[in-house]
Image (tube, rainbow, N blue to C red; front, top):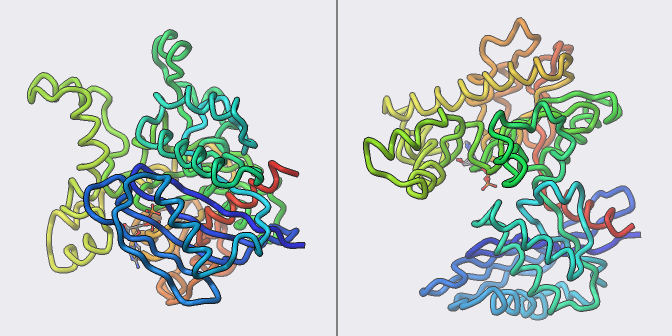
Length: 401
Ligand code: ADP
């Protein structure tokens, strides 16, 4: 039996959605995908609706609110198909960025759960409020359809205290919930499970290091299907160098900048999140631009890629130590799936750990799940394309089962 799930990812000024049909094994078909941008902004935004079996449907207008944008999405389904009634929507799965310590798994939404989610807003002031708006609008639009919150943080709730605890004063930890939460959980869950299947092993017997390298980037050590360490922390700022985020830095940097540059905490936070990373080092947050500039001899771009890969290599070594035994190192997301140079440079010098990328396999134009290490490698290096929407749909149905 297949079940239809609408996956909604509502951001502060955008909505991304997919309608998926999942079979009993959790394998899925995309029936439609789409997006709306510039919601709540002055100028017009665009709704792009792409049904799998019909031509794309586009509309440009001012989307004053998330309500209006979601109404237009429903109209797109009515006009261009597939009909949501005909698809017999089983459920709606909402991506929610931060579940704090309250939510350890995907959770069926009711008024109480929405109230609890609201209490978590201070932990993720940029992400959670629009997620909640999306939930409220969708609950009104589909009163009869069960809806589920699927959290980016939930997969990491299995972290042991030694990994999630920051060595900071008790009051910060207890009163203000300062600890490592981790993000990209749906991607790490999906990719680590697919990696076990690729290796022909059960999830329970498989240890992998997953490198999710997109605009945001994080590493996760997965032991027997459970996240035991991850690089993002209280917020998605910690860890790897990202498109616009710095990742790790000395925690004294904000206070230093306050003293010497008069920047307040909010300003430093903004710049570390939006003007740092590849953008801060090389002038673009898109690794393709950085690579092009590096090829043309731009020293800043070259350094940016070296810093980016050096950070990844450090984390592979650290997470190898955390896991003790590693069955595979897995690359995923935009950079991880597509950029062969990042896979080479970030694993260079790790041969003694059994990690070595095979130049021919790594450079092959192949797509899809594949090994980029030589056959028989001690620690296979894999590329597994991530699919967060399928994972959200799968967790949505599991929460309702
Ligand atoms: P998001 O985190 O927004 O989902 P993606 O997973 O799509 O982002 O990753 C975006 C990143 O992937 C960008 O830095 C982009 O440059 C990089 N990327 C995408 N395709 C390629 C490619 N063919 N070669 C190198 N980098 C790529």
